[in-house]
Length: 302
Image (cartoon, rainbow, N blue to C red):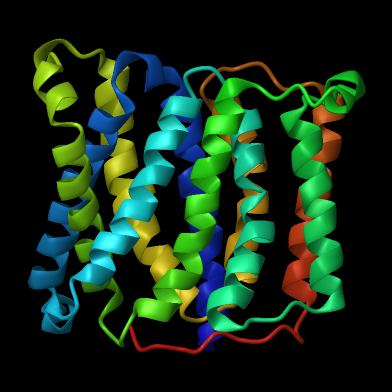
């Protein structure tokens, strides 16, 4: 399989798994502190990845070099996860996932700044279409709300987390030095677990773990095993095979996946006008993936 094709398949799975964290996270966000949820998911996910790495004999001791890389990466991605759960306290899952689709535009900027990855004309058009589609969903298909720029507090909080996520993607390609993807992801998660545990120690101690609602434990297990452990491996695998803008282009599928998740969980379907914005984000994804002239990221062995 060509490296680029593997990257595309990884990001397709990534977008579906991430969408589940929005749908489930909205149901648990008000029952647990975001820092506590993030710390717990990181500890569980890092333990799972470490176990898998040692079980399959793929642990790579080279990840122990330059540990400052994981302090930086884990700090950035921790900011993203904390902001997501904080934002989900007040913002609807579809709207929050639409904010997430703004990351390709931001990632393209960071990709040029850090890796000198340049955009083609078609990529610019695709990112613009996707951005308009995302804003249409964020403003809930209400033109008056858009003109008044009436953005909810949850969306604003999560937007800054998405900026962190967009920076994280090209940084992987910049900082990874040929280490095995599983080990590299494990160290990033472990760094996040340590940082969030130190910063949120008071909240972690104050949490009544024995009496948390069942939905919190379901969400925690999902985000730890699928939206953290699995998605970290998939994202880091793809980030060394595709340009940053194309990696993050798959976030355009997230609102669609979120709607599927919500329908499966019994939620009512969204307004039909909102589907227009989602259709634009899917069109943007198609345009980005058809742009074969985009520069390829350097491929690192996994």
